[in-house]
Image (cartoon, rainbow, N blue to C red; front, top):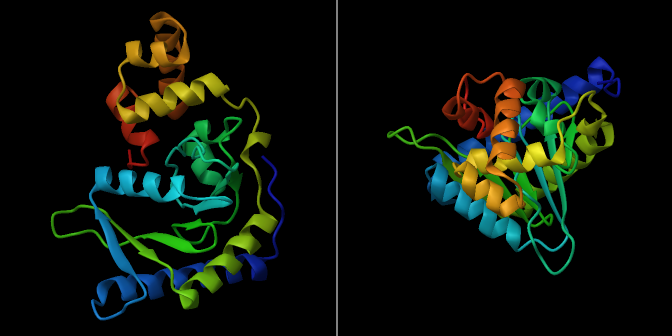
Length: 229
């Protein structure tokens, strides 16, 4: 994969801006008196439900900037087409080649911060982990926070390139099977949904395990959901 060459100054500037924004948001999340961010979900399951609910309301675009390799879900079904963009660093595609599947909307860029922007009006940010080691999700509609985030997103999109340019990109069917695997669906359920045989799904699951370097289904599911190996 050939990335757009950035000057060290430009690359460093993007990293600094992202780090500064992340620090400001974490400080706001930890300060109960700061009204700019509000807690919307605690725990992985609750976060997934909340993200899906908010993104399904989008009318124009959803942009995720993530440093990890969490497999993006399908584009929300809405009356109007929603443009979904996911920006990840190059090493994320190396760790999870399924990010380079056609149709994911994944782009490779020097990602500096984990956040999601919905229609330019809502930002969703991963907050601090609770004492019970549960992830948290915060949301903001504050213009003071959204403006620099939109500017960072636009600058990153400008220097990013489609991950589909990667050689030997997995197939679209492998992506759909991987999404089912990430949800914990049984092979028979996946086969019924895709209109294919269980044996075909089993072959695709084996290929996915090899792609992500997993020794078993459980490990593959963790990788596809962004958990560290």
